[in-house]
Length: 592
Image 1: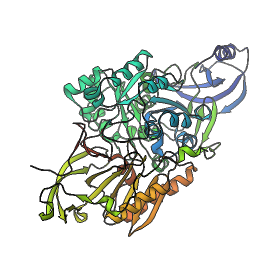
Image 2 (image 1 turned 60 degrees about the vertical axis):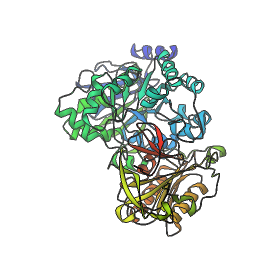
Image 3 (image 1 turned 120 degrees about the vertical axis):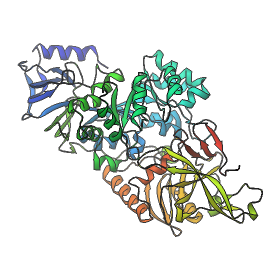
Image 4 (image 1 turned 30 degrees about the vertical axis):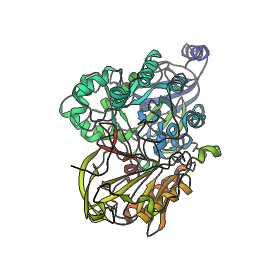
């Protein structure tokens, strides 16, 4: 927020009474309001832009010759969970800033589900000292599915109201249709609390169309980031909802949605970009919001349209266009210098007038973060986990005499977090249901990890293509119990116990041994280590998963979303298999 002293400093510098801090000269400014490219200089003081006038003639303490580079506003990620990058806020800047992202709109619901408001306080202590801007989308649904999952923390109305008053608070975070159609009550109070503070409410309306979507929007929802098909995007725009076009590690939506926008000549005024959930190794390999922009341009979108989606559209939507989203007088000096608009790879990145990245590297890389012991000890198994833990007893009255049973099956959709509800026949031996590895039907389990119930939920999944071993993770949205998929019970128990022993992370097990791991001890979600170490370990365990037969680009991201009880068709928690649209636990077996 601006102070009187800051306003005075900018005005005095603009009138030539005092010198500016920095002059970026000899550049071509890309104006997101007029689509002009104007040769000019940019004058900066106290982190803000003083003037973009080509003949300002102002003095500056320091001058940088930009050699004709193009100047763009810093990019804005409109919805993300920094926990799923696997990095802490301190080290995250090392990968997003060289890509040109200077502002994050983050929903820290993952931390909150594990450790409540105290965990949020701990993780946000560093916000003011970060070399990028972190706004908070206040988590609206902790837990995500009340009564259908066990979590470590809860954010009720009192906590949400407190968080909405934090200076970092930007909006009420994603709220799904079940909270509108089924629960109401406290969730309506949370929406009203956001509106009373003139803050928007983010949506999460995957799969909803028609009158259901109308009712959902009528509750005061402002946007949705869950569009997969163009018809979903179009219907949301018709209702006045903004659409945040997402490209994460396992949620690949840019190509299909942008193609639809271009084919139908749809205005981009209500469109913007987000990553939602993207692992650090994918950011390093592909890029961040600049990847979304570059893909849109490659698909045929005018570069200025794509840039507006990543800057001013986002700023306007979140009501912060007075601070960010454009290179204009009085605004914060978040500036990217690039060579070409056809493929945007920043040569230099300025955050509030300070050079923070050059040629893909940070000027001052972050030091590994230090966190208190309590936030690194959040995994507690109430009961011993053995191979017998994963034995699934058939509910059939004739189970001991039956050779097969019919079960509900989760079928994964490639490059998406949605799944399909299917059925399959599986073998029964001595009353226990087995998987069918040859048919890629694997056992799935979620083990409660907060020491509260010791519950274990079971299901079956098709799409991982493991031929041996098991994978386990303490990152399992949004409850973050330990989710495990495997070809046999012994390796599943080895993997789950290994996750618990290292207080969270990713594990691959085979033939009774751990063959790969990535420790994530901070809430069982993040690593305190350097970017380089986390990337190396993430790449290594992904390769280990592939050695077990899995062909996915991001196997642990796919595993983490399989448990989400708000994404159709089926989810799985420590309480069992969840019918997402009906919002209830269902029987694993199909009895007709």
